[in-house]
Length: 410
Image 1 (tube, rainbow, N blue to C red):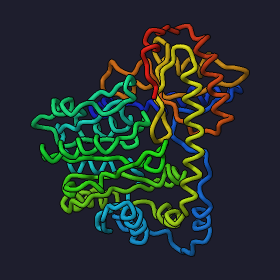
Image 2: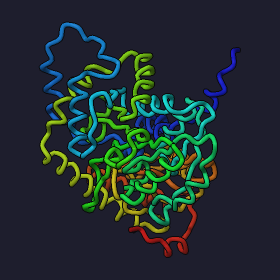
Image 3: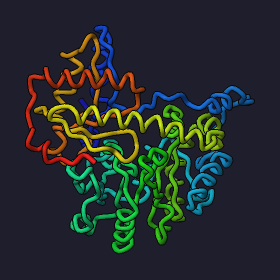
């Protein structure tokens, strides 16, 4: 039998989706499963998306240009320039979701064997992109004790070696919900300029920022024209995940010309998603205010419930719609599977993403899980009831009262 590639064997399974077969089996048994494992918003996609699709007058669904439809790219340019970014159409490459944007960015900027520094816990697919590109992740570990803030600069400097080519952050962060502040971004700006590195920033969750805090796009920081690559998407802000439309943005001409080669190799991004996504950028500020209020209420409810559970720790996220929760269990991979296989509360259970898959360090995350608060509060309430009951019934429960007493969740 032919041998599977080494790269294929190294490719990790998604912690977000790997328990899906157990959820399917649970539903087949008549169990209602609350899906808190994946960042799939339940808010409706704005009507403007569907109206544009319904009114398209096309006889042929043709390829789009490899870099994207010009009118659609213009919408991204206008959007970022309102933030003070000063970009042009040539700085935008349309992709099949932000995932492809990041994969192309890695391939354009890093060679096999190069290193990229990423704070962990990190978005699990970053590990997959790095594996596919032959790139080594050098993790800088953040901790729940300080809400997953960026460690001191020296922790990053210590990881920089001759093969280091880039630093990657997600801001606001998936999976922690941490929002990087101006001082932290200035630290990163200083580092990439000092050591001549690329700065990759995933800004998909920009609109989801709470408590009056400010999101700062790395494209607005001075001096990073040659260093910064931003990845973005319509998936989350417009609840249009299935459109699979993202962008790679950089003012580095050489980077964009190189990225275009990879874009041409995959032909083009989806035409329909671009055409239908174009009017979404004309939605009024009230649209963003309403979705922010909804997610803020869900955030407050979820974290209050989690912090009230015995032995559970969960900092209040500053952005996105995720939280990393520390649970008093022996292993969250086993616990999350047990919730789907062996537990229900009045015919209901929940699905979470075990956090071990959000760390590149094998020994970390085994008592943590990522929770996505993408369901309405009534469903979140029932899911939290299930979690609380499940923790009480789980055979592998542990107790960590002393650690809880020293935890500051704010």
